[in-house]
Amino acid sequence: MNPTAPNHFASGQVTFLGAGPGDPGLLTLRAVEALASADVLIADPQVLDVVRVHARAQVDTPLQASADEASIPADVPALRDTANLVMAAARAGKRVVRAVTGDPGLDGYVAEEMLACAAEGIVFEVVPGIAAAVGVPAYAGVPLRDAHGTDVRFIDARTADERCWTEVGASDATAVVSTSLDSVAAAAGELVSAGRKPDTPLTVTVAGTTTRQRTWTATLGSIAQVLKAAKVLPSADGGQPVIAVVGERSAAAQRDRLSWFESKPLFGWRVLVPRTKEQAASLSDQLVSYGAVSHEVPTIAVEPPRTPQQMERAVKGLVTGRYEWIAFTSVNAVKAVREKFEEYGLDARAFAGIKVAAVGEQTAKALVAFGVKPDLVPSGEQSAAGLLEDWPPYDPVFDPIDRVFLPRADIATETLVAGLIELGWEVDDVTAYRTVRASPPPAETREAIKGGGFDAVLFTSSSTVRNLVGIAGKPHNVTVIACIGPATAKTAEEHGLRVDVMSPEPSVHKLAEALADFGAARRDAAIEAGDPVTRPSERRPGSRRRARS
Image (tube, rainbow, N blue to C red; front, top):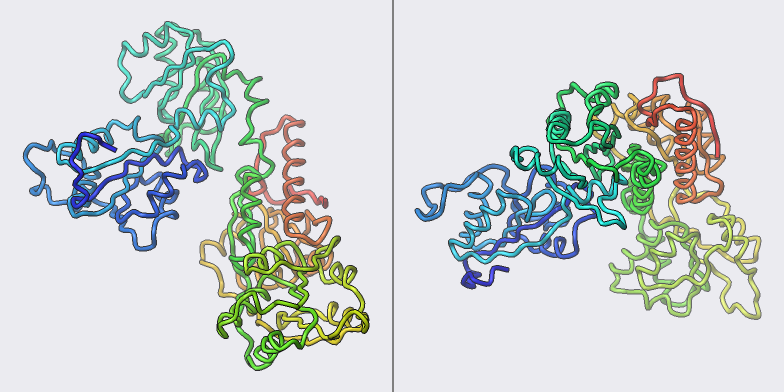
């Protein structure tokens, strides 16, 4: 915070916030905190989506200059449109967050905005971010220093003068050059002219820290030919920013061992997850950890039962001691019971004296979030069959009540009911919610599904297969089809889909692991054959191979 400015909080305050190079996970805790309290968010277009998710729904995000320049005091120099927006909002008493790519301390225009705030006595603070010149090489597997303490020089090719190029060219320091894709060769030429050898190693990274990241390894003398051979240039996207690292630390042999980000098994894959948004959340997080871009498409919608009386009687029976057990077979079942509890003013204490079973880990987590620790979770397979394997038979000596409450979907199978009856229990099989086909996704998503825009799709049940094909069409032949088990795979094949990956056990997380293993094997095979590593969507139809894991 500016210690010399008057404490004019009534005039608003500004937080100059570094949003990092592009990976949303690189925002600092302080940045998230500042965004949550912002009245106005003014962000560089490159990071607007990164920061907006942490702001309040009511936050104002002006996209164009609207400040009246006549209102700017005479002693404040003329500023850019963005700066005028910042100042106008601060004068109106707003809490303003000005989010910039990388770190605000390395942005000369932001320095102007800080000076303008200081001139008017507007309180401001700076939240540092990870600079692109540091974060991008780290994600590219290019260390800037080693144990020998090599000097590092940072160059902005847009503003570098002849003296700057000469000093860096005459040294053996590692040079980190911020430039554009179509200007890389020119920057390399400047360093060669200044004294660097043409065979000095060079790496060039575009879209650093995002799943669009690509890195090319070359030398100062060969970079133009490498980019041309890779069909990267000439391109209409030649103006996009890149980070080039020049020096022995960017040698190809070292980057091959340290390229941790681009070597993830599903790096850059667009994976379709046809589940409800609540169900897809944890699965999407797992896919992101493998380098994938998860795209959630709900195929079913969850609605209350048509006649609520049966559910109402069962919930009242919980309170009056009608049941010995309650068994939850899905997260949606937990949600349905919880909503009914809230309707009656009940909470988790109503489960006192009742044994609680959960079909798997995700359902158990939903119960814990409700304040209930389940007494029984399958030790083996997380399914109705796995739950039955661990379920104790009814014992009239030790079990004072012989009845089980089973809140389920309207389309649930009878496996669990029949198994519990066989164990001697009476079962109240209650429809807690209905599942209906969701509305079709946007036209753009439907075209991507049918046109091969997705690299893989994860089917977690037969209904997701039927519903996705019903609302969006059949996935393209190049798309990798991954199924959670034999029944789901059979349904996929009945719809004309070729199954590439099958989970070793009926678990969504094991399914994601199986897809990651498939992606890793595919990547290794390409490297061993000397072929470029591509995504399935980049391959032509007819080149797929069938492989189950």
